[in-house]
Amino acid sequence: MCAINSNDMNDISLQPNILAQCDSLVMLQRLESETVTLAYCDPPWHPELPEGEATERAFLEHLSKIVQQTQRVLKDTGCLYFHSLPSMTGVTRTILDQVFGRKNFRADIIWPRRIKNLRSSEVVQQHDTIHVYSKSDTFIYRSPTRALKTHELQDHFPYADNNGPYRLTDLTMHVERPQFQFSWRGFTPPPTRSWRYNEDAMNRLDESGLIDFSTSGRLPKHKVYLKNDATVEIESIWYDLGTSGTPQSMASTQQPVALLERIVSMSTDENDVIVDPFCGTGAALIAAHSLNRRWFGCDISPHAILTTAEELKKLSNVLPTQYNIVDQADMEQCACVSLMSYKKLYLGFADSKARELIHGGESGWCEFKAVLRGRPEANDGYDLQHSCLKTVAAFLNSDGGTLLIGVHDDKTVLGVRVEEFGGRDSFERHFWGLLHEALGKTASNDIKTYFEEICNKPIYVVECGRSEVPVYLKYKRRSDKGKEEEFYVRTGPRTESLSISEAIQYIIKHFDIAKQDFQRATL
Image (cartoon, rainbow, N blue to C red; front, top):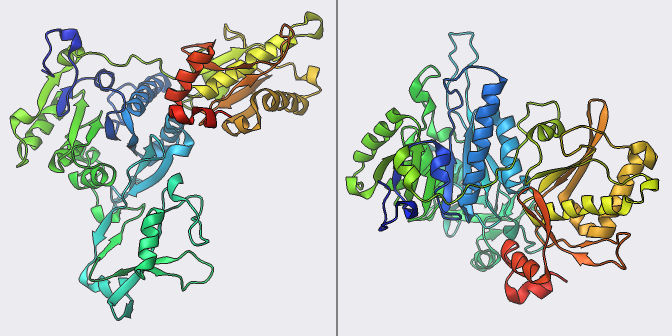
């Protein structure tokens, strides 16, 4: 039983080191928000289900909910490592980009997982891809290294001075960390890379004579002496971990503990919590426990849970009293923390994103508007435009979303009457003029717009990301005496206006702005 001291079964909450035979969502819904440092997902890409688009759509919709719950439980310093087959990377990246945001994509790790059978004409998968996404810019990420072999030392330490053999290593790493992309001594890393150290550490290295500036016009290098470091950094292709069996083997779907030990070491510290919603035979949980991390793991398969339990027994630092094994009935007695309103994601089945969104209907992340403005004789154009603009502002101030102009609330595709604006280009100029006037030009950085054809009718798609700063709507309707600033947010499928006191509290919490910084941040 997943127990803490509680007399009320509805008040039982989960504590780490739980191995659960249950649906992944059932467990994730019961984890507290922002308590997990690392999530590792390796979904069963070939479940024993009937083939067909409906089945695949249902699986991916379920997977998208698991990713959204995973994003919720991650700390700001947390990362998701999502294990995908190359044939599925397109749809997995589509899902992950929509949940975590493209700006929080950090790296793709290539793992040569299988070897091609040269005696067969069959094309055998030779590698897997692990997508790395962070919750925020302040994530934990340590580049892995491996020990150099004796015959490699001369190649890797080709230089020498009075302090001994040394090599020149890159002071940047192939991951985007905005706080580590500062200018130093006139040098700035390329957009896709970041400094390995903070500015103080860089200065200390320079003062110690461990920075080499000899390569004119290029970034400086770090002098690493053999007596201090006989390792080499492993970047995005992990050849050193080898492969894991043959494509026909059931074991080939499970990952070696060494792979998970590396991932756990890269993005967690001791006593941190990891979660694996598809734990299989438990490699991630075994790696976590052996490295003194806490964990939550689940799998729907009874065989997987029994196998994981047997593997845990083999670890010298695991006692049976240090973890609990529960089933779905046990798990459902624990307090449910989140029955979140799931974002309807584009999964790639329809011939357009707009069609997919229309199929899903309006939600907290999608809203339909029949028109941008009414006909001149209706005298309602200003109010209709205001309705569209406040929806955009609300998406920006919340977690993002998509506005479809030219679609009725009942999903009827009406199309945008672009001829009333003088064509599509004129419509877009008019719309962007409204955005700049009502929301400010900086808000447009988080907005993407385009037309899509559905039933031979133009639909205007307005994709809004989550703004990093509060966005205010300043727009004069016909009924207004003057322009008044308004603050809108999404509450479920509705757009709501907040009062001044409500807006202040929301901004402080949602934008992580300290009270003393509120006035400066909102000028």
